[in-house]
Length: 191
Image (cartoon, rainbow, N blue to C red):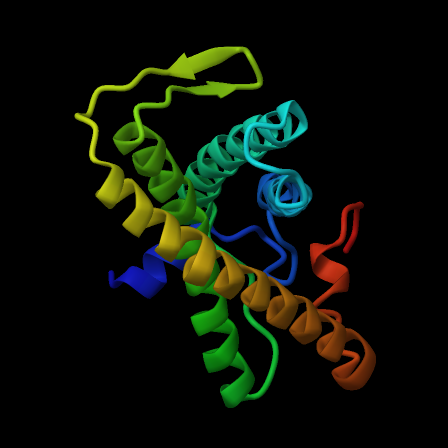
């Protein structure tokens, strides 16, 4: 039995339907990532040292850690439940796979980078005031700055671009191809 046979064993009886847990995690991830992006964009409008900037960065970090935890849950669920048969032409399937796995990688990597940046800057990270991740690495401001450059200057904008591309792909399937790809990811029974 090869890997594809094992994956098919985990798929739902109707191979066109996403597992409800994966649907829920997908939409929760969207909301949490959107919140993290909005918070950091708002924080950028405040001067360093302004309490409002600090509050929005606190929320940005909290949503970032939440996205990391949700993505870990998504990956574990996806590996356990499989996925329905993809729909589309071969070029669409290849592009969708690249975008999809790049999104997964970035949603895992960006919060880890943010946590490392905080570690090297000697800042513990409170997650919505529920728990804190203490500092356990030595201070290294140059490493923190380098991570910030990659995190905010490259990886964050690439994540946003990939989310836009993913959304455009879903809309393309819905309005141009009219193949049900978007409908089967929407919440609700029988989709």
